[in-house]
Structure formats: C-alpha cells, structure tokens
Image (tube, rainbow, N blue to C red; front, side, top):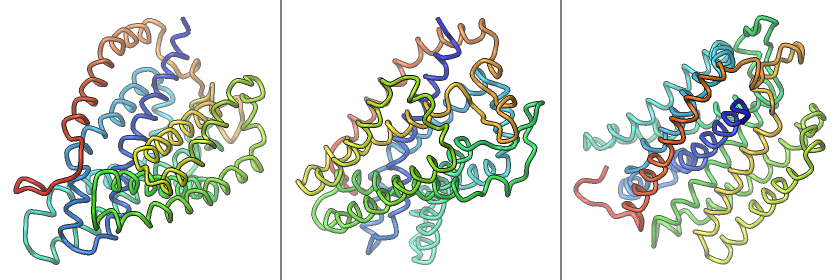
Length: 338
C-alpha cells in the first residue's frame, strides 16, 4: 500500500470535512450583520452554537495529521505563512470569544461591539483560508533547503486575493442556505434574498478564479489529462453548483444545502488533485517543491498513524453524526441560549 498517497487522501478528507462543516459556521458569521434586532442575531448565533467548536476539531486534526505525516511540508508552510497564521489564529480566537461574550452584558454598545467582532473575525479567517489555498496553487518562494525565501507581501498577490474573495462568497452562500434551513417565518424572509446574492457573488468569483488560474498556470490541468476519470468530478462540481439556484427557486433548502456541500467537496478535490503529488509548490524551481514523498515521515510512522486513524475515525464520525442528530430541527431561543 502507498501510505504516502493514503495520507494525502486522508488530509483531503479532513480538509473537506472542515470546509463543509465550519464553512457554514463562518458563513453565518459573515452574514450576521443583516439581522435587524437582538432576537434575530441570537437566532443566528444559536443556529451554530452547539456545533461550531466541534466543527473546528477537523481543522485541528488536519494540522496534527500534516505535522505527523509530512513534517517537512508542515515546517515550510508554517514558516512561510507565519504572520498570516498568527492573524488567522487571532481571528478564530476572537470569533469564539465574540460568541461567548456577547450575552454577558445587556449593554447595547457591548453587544454591537461583539457583533462586529463576530462578523470581522469570521470574514477575515475565511479570507485567509482562501489566500492560503491560492498561494498553494501558484506556488511560494521555497529554496533548495525547503525554506521559505520570501516575505509576507509575496503572499498577497492578485490570484490568492481572488481565491480569498471566492472563499468568502462561498462561505456566505453556504451559511445563508444553512440559516434558511434552520429558521422559519420572518428569519427565512430575511435570509432568502441573501442566498441569491451570495450565489451571484460566488458565481462571479468562481468564473474569474478559473479563468485566472488557467491563464497563469496552464499546467494546472496536467493531472486531469493524465487521469481522464477525474473530469467526472469537474462535471459533478458544475452540476452541483448549478443545482443550488434551482433548489432555492423550488423552495428546497435541504437540497440546496446538499448541493452547496457537494460543490465545496468537489472544489477541495479539484484543489488537491491539481496539487498532487505536491504539498508545497516552489515558485523558484519545480525541483524545490515538497511532495508527498520527499516531505514525508518514515514508512513505519505512516503505518502506525494509519492504524490509529482506522481505529479513531469511526468514533469521530459517529460523534459528529450524534451531535448533528441531537440538535436537528429549527432553532429555538430558550433561557440557556446565547
């Protein structure tokens, strides 16, 4: 068994799980300010209240798995994105604090401050995830020693920024569909137009990002030419994305949410498949790129980790399913709510 490939696939699964599950959490934060009063904001926060911290476990697990399976790539990525990661960590912490602190005082100024903090931290974190993905696709300055040879401003380029904006728009779309699914009455009336608006922004940024990528990196489709079966995922991604407005128009939010989730899953697959077998693409020379073989731990380490993952993953999936089942249905505000 090719354990290096196995762990590349498992990292993709963890990344997809985080993108889908925490994607709607971040999306709710991004559109949070459309609420017209305190009750509507509480409904929005409580729609993700029991879930958001569990969803972030997928990101923590992704980071831990990369550290153990591909330590050289982990070190290069964190050295290159150090400032961005510190800002991202600050945003994720501030987002959590905003959710918890908002209800601690009755002052309107206090609530307003944390409402804006929740929005800003959610939007910033989502944007930074997209910028990181954009840089991963077009490459970063990595030298022959596998060290980052650039500066923070080398990461802020037009294409990564465009991917960052696309990520924000997709999260807003995913979150608005989730909110429509979890609410009723006036809240649905409030959220409904934002499903259309966020879909429109997502469509524009999706098309621009695709054209931009293919124009500056024609080699991005090399794996698709080598493995013709992969075009199935391209078609499925387009069909799922196209089904979102159809499901919204027909008043089927659950199908719209499934389509949105599948679109995100497909995009993670396309992102991973475009990178393969690389983990870190060097913009200085292809020979300096770190891939799943030259950046990996020993075969024994990967094997032990595979056994642990085989034992642990069913428990993680069962726990996630149980939590979502326990908190299914529409949001209700009680004395114990945020």
